[in-house]
Structure formats: structure tokens, C-alpha cells
Length: 345
Image 1 (cartoon, rainbow, N blue to C red):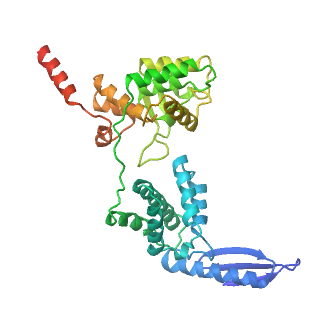
Image 2 (cartoon, rainbow, N blue to C red):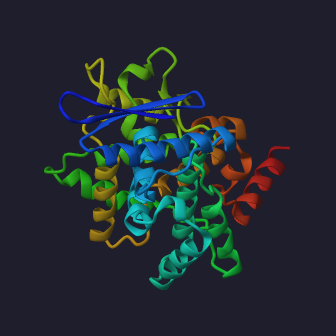
């Protein structure tokens, strides 16, 4: 029940107590206080009867996205996606969001020529936001509507899975890149060492740019990779991995006499990615990404005789099926291995 009190300043103080819920606010006009009280009482009644509160008047999808960003501090890729979604559907009233609205959104996006993989990721991200609104904010909304919109893409025969890349840099391409970077005295990023380190560790670009001196164990020649990518555990997935001889030499070279800070000073993921791409374009190396070095590194680890558990420790994969996509076994390699084993026996 709401109680209204006029303050000496002339403003109105309103207090709502209902079902164990208490809220209070101050307004310049009594009618504003009354309108607010009606809304709060409605929310309280809904919370008591259903376990969820009704969506506040004027609350948009964009407001929920903003709350989600503030609460979860998403990584760069997801943050970029959230901002894109907010631009496209943020103006929708959250309480009125429905399947028809998202169906129109999907249709419009597909007409722009967007890849199904990208649109599927956007809808999955929106689904996470709606689940957050339902389970964390306790808002009475349909949290499954975005998931259903994503599922409908299959009926439209839109491919939502990315094609697995098999691209790896060749020795010739890597040498061309090294030569170019090492001859450029104005280049501030140690691109050649970053790439050699990637090939020696199978680390992701972001992991390489984040690892710190404080997490290096000189006795065991290991480093801790913090918050390593994991679909089931976004935060706190720390892994201690060995730095093999070439990687260890590069790390020690960049650490020098320092005792704290990042191993690779002033190296940031976006800058490294941009430099790599620019150089590939300049050298006319087609369709090569920094992440393709990880593919080659994993294959080389297997070729060097490491077993699945040992490679997965270095790469961070916890599922052989996922790790297997990086290993394109060639028929010639099978012949060579069989010939070696037959000769040895």
C-alpha cells in the first residue's frame, strides 16, 4: 500500500510496502508520485503471485542490454555484438517483445546479405540477455523468444554453422612475414617474436598479449594463462602450461630484467591483429589470419610426438572432438609413419 507525504520543500515523498517489498521515492508533483506508486504496486503484486515482476513502463530492450553489460563486463567480441543488437532492436519495448518482431528482424538482416553464422551469434547473444532479465532481474518476460528465432533459421535453410578452416601458413609465407617485420625499424610491435611464440605454444592471440611476468615460474618453465577461453567457464579458468624451449627463450628475451607487467609490453590483441592483416595484404598473402598459426602449432605438436592430453594442456582444449578439427591428417603422413614403424621393427 502506498503512503504519500508532502515535504516542507513542497515535493512529495511516496512509500510503497507490499508483500515484503519496500520502495520509496520523491517527486516534484503528487501525480508523478501516484503514477510511480501504481507501477511499483503492480510490480510487487506480480512478484508475489508469479515470482517475477512486471516490466517497468518505458523499459526497452536497450536498457536491459545496458544492465547486462554493466553486470557481466563482456569480452570485446560480445560487447561489439551487444551494441549492434542495441542499435537494431534496442528501441523495442521489452514487455512487448515477441516472436513476430524478431522474425521481422531476422528477415531484414538476411536481406542485407549477412552470414547466417553472424546472425545466429547475434540471436544467441540476445537470448543470453533475455535469460539474464528473467533469472537475474526477475522480469516477467519471454526469455525463449530469441532462442526460437534462432531455431527458425534452420527452417529457412540458413546455414548457422561456420565452415571449419583448414588454412595454415606455409614456411615460405612465414619467412616472408619475418623478413618484412625484421627489416622494418619503425615497427614497434615485436610481430616476428609474437608469431614465433604462437607457433611454439599454440596459444591464442589474446592469451599471448595478456600473459604476465608474475605468472611465470622460472624453475618449472611454465606460465599461467588466466581466464582461458572455455564455453562452460568464462571466468577463473586458469591453466598452468609449459613453455617449450623456443617459447621459453622468446619469453625470457622480452622479460629481460623486469619483474612485473606483461611479458610482451604494449602488445594488445587488436593492434597485433591489425598489424598482421596489413602485412599479409602488403605481401599479397591471401586469406591468412593470426589464429591460423594456432592450427599449424597444434598440428606440429602432434607431429612432434606429443599425445592428446599433452597437446590439450598446451592448447587448452578439453574435448578431443574440438581439438581434432585442428588436426588434418594427410594420407602421406600415415604412409610415412607406417613406413618408419615397419622399418624400426
